[in-house]
Amino acid sequence: MSTPFPSHPKVLAFDTFGTAVDWHSGIAREVQALRPGVDGDAFANAWRDGYKPAMRRVMSGELGWTLIDDLHRIILDQILGPFGLADLSETQKQHLNKVWHRLDPWPDVVAGLTRLKSRYLICTLSNGNIGLLTNMAKRAGLPWDCILSAEVFRAYKPDPATYLGVAQVFDVAPAEVMLVATHQDDLAAARACGLQTAYIERPAEFGAAHPKDVAPNPANTLHAKDFLALADQLGG
Picture: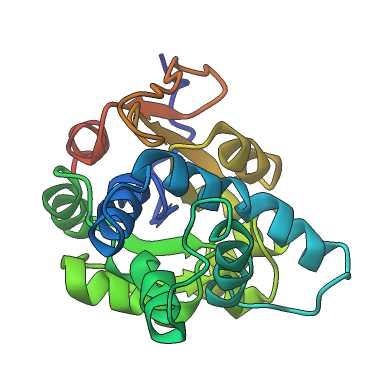
């Protein structure tokens, strides 16, 4: 299920949305509270579906550098009408857009990170902006040593500048960094930059009605059910 360690990493860099926090449940719950009767499951996935196309607009140069908070608002404005939410007030729209700051961690995350933190440097490596990630960590009790974001590097994953940037920040070799994520494309891009990789199973990332394939990929350094299992494997 995993390849042998080339060596233990010094830095663990974590994807956040889906890996550390449950975006689907949080968004579905808040939009349904705002407007009972809305299909929260479909709304959450529609909002997330706009994420990569919006980032591509920045990466192609169509848009200048744009924070994820602002990209989230662009996508939100596009989907409000189809879900019958076009009549929300501007205050309601702004509050809903900040739901990404208020996401709950998966049940294993805080305890798993606390164990891993005792042995490794732990940081985020997320496309979320610094303010978003800081608010999320404060609310959810996520004990990061450092918050790194696409905002720091002015590049979104999977740009190599993000993965290599972690190594540069901590003055370590890329092979001494391990990316922890539940997205195989993210991990593949990290491996291409020389990082170690750990896949985390989050079968309900897109909601219980849409189970995700979490089969192991032997190209990853490690494969773990959750953060506690990762701590078991890494000795944290």
